[in-house]
Structure formats: C-alpha cells, structure tokens
Length: 406
Image (cartoon, rainbow, N blue to C red; front, side, top):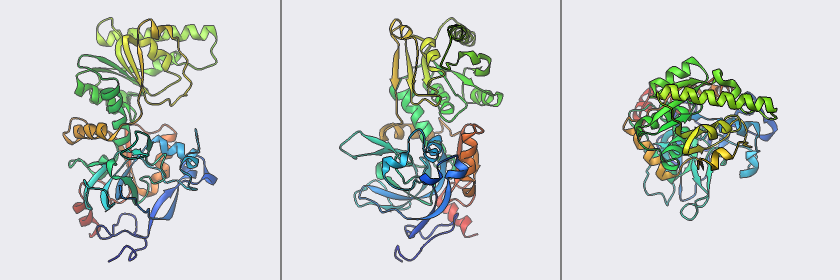
C-alpha cells in the first residue's frame, strides 16, 4: 500500500500504521475570519505536511487547549500568520499521539512509538538556540489529524495516562518547570507565591513546589480553585477578590496609588498569617504582568526572585524600582523550556510525582467551543480535546485500534 492509496480518514479512525493519507481534517485559522474562537476556528480538509530529514509526522490522538491558539485566532497581539508566511494557520501546541512517519535523520524514534510533544521548535536545530513555539509561531499545530514536529520535540507518553490526559500538560507544565526549577532555582524550605494558582500554569507550580520541598501560597479567584490548590499541595490560599485594590490599573491617581500600596501591605500580612511568621516569600511566580507586578516586586523578600514568563494583563510593567535595588531582588525572565528541561519534567509525570489536572475533555467538533470558553475565562486547570482517539479513557494505540474495530 502506498501513501497515495488513502485520501481522507474520518475523525476517530486511523489508516494502517504508517500509511499517510493525502489529506487530513484540521481546524484552520485564516486572516479573513480573525475574531473570537467560534468565528476563527473552522474545520477544513488540508494537504498532509511534507517533512524534512529531522522531522516526523505524528497521528494526533488528543490535543491540549492553550491561550496561544486564541491569540492566533484573534490576530492579536500580533498577526502570527505574517511570522510564518502562510495564508492559514493550524493552532495547537500540545498533543499526544503515535509516530506515523520518520525523517531520514531521526534516530531515536520509530513508527508506532507513543509520544507526547513539547512545543520548543528550534529554528536551526543543532546550530542555534533560537526557538519558536510549535503550533503558534509555526503553522502545523495539533488541531489536525496529523501534525508535523521535529524529532527533538518528542517525549515518551507516560504509560499510566490516557491520550487526553497526556495531551493536556506539556506547554503549561514544562513552562512552570523551567521557571521554578531551572530559572528561579527554588530550594527546599523556601516559600513561593503563585499567582493564578488555579490556572494551567499555577496547578503545576504548586505541585513542583511540593516536590521541591517548598511552601506554596496559592492566589486564586474562586472557592473551587482554592480547594483544588490545597489538593495539589498548597500550604495556604489567598482569595484575590479580597484584595482587589492591590491591582495596578493605569492611569492611577495619588489616592489610588496609596490605596494600592496599603492593600499590598495587607496582602503581605495575610502571607505572614499563613506562614505563621513575619517573613516574605523568596520567590514570586509571575505571569499576570501589569496588574500584579508592582505587588510582586514589593512582596518578594530581600534577595528574593520574581520569575516571569508572560503578562496576560499587559506587557508594560510599572513598579517602584527602589524596592528592587535596595533589597537586591532579581527579576528573572523565562520562556517555555528546551528539550532537556522538558525531558526532566516529563520524568516526574512518568513517575507519578506530578499529575495533569485535566478538568474537561471536549470532542473534536467542540474545539471552537473549548477555546471560546477559555477566552471567556470559564475554564480552569488544563483542558483537552479528542482528535484521533474515538473516546476518552484509552491509553495505548492497541486499545484505540480495538475500539475502532468495535
């Protein structure tokens, strides 16, 4: 049988192992329909990707839902299609699946291997540290039956996880691991403040703090997220709604600035109450940006570290720099993870020391709806969608084939 034998396969089915169809179903973003996810994501039949010697094709069993796909569909804060130069974009930066075709230079993987994918796509593999985020800065993401990745992006799928669980954690977990373990270098006995602890990054930050022997203080917005945070090992929880005046919202009057500082001090006292001693946190886990960053600088201890990977409320950060230099604090930037970091992080999942916190799984047809709900802040934890897997609960390709055959 040749690659030309099969044109298109229904969702939830697979051709014989290693046989590549001519076309694949995918949810596609095009610039003429930029907007909310229910408008920007539309299903199309697309040609299957060609691969370079260092690349592989993966038959996607499940994909993870992340906010970068929403950005791609909005065309904001940048039109990512201009970056990769194609008139369409297939989003999706997390996936689990089966290796389907292997480039001639790939040595560590073979057709049939069950894998998860990390999204650090190297611009010049082997010669440069430049990276792009697969499925965001590249057009060949996981919301398609077949995705194209570099061989170095593959990791073993943890055997105890279902396809949908295995697809749910990569981007957020590997980012959190890089931030705390590799960049902030958290140490046993330290205290860590985790903003957005009920979200995709925060749920992994809490678990990593526990594994590392740190006390994590979780900042959340709802009682259900507080309960989840404690289940994941948080030492204590703060409801940010009790301290709404802590957030920096420019432009700001002198009176508003004073209220914000007073509220930040009250927030710091709440940390003392949780810890049972008058001390500040050594590390602040930041990804909120403009609204919380002034507080993060103030709340970190002397010689403390603020590690940041993004800024969901705004990229232009304003803070009193005296609190930085006079207490010799450090601001540490972090951007996703490399293959080594992702591999080390994945081993913690394989050993059951860190677990995905998958709160919902959507069917293929609901990919636009899943992103719309994330866009409207109606999801928490991590979220997956089924692609090639015919139902939830399947863990291996063998099980998947058995269900497909009825």
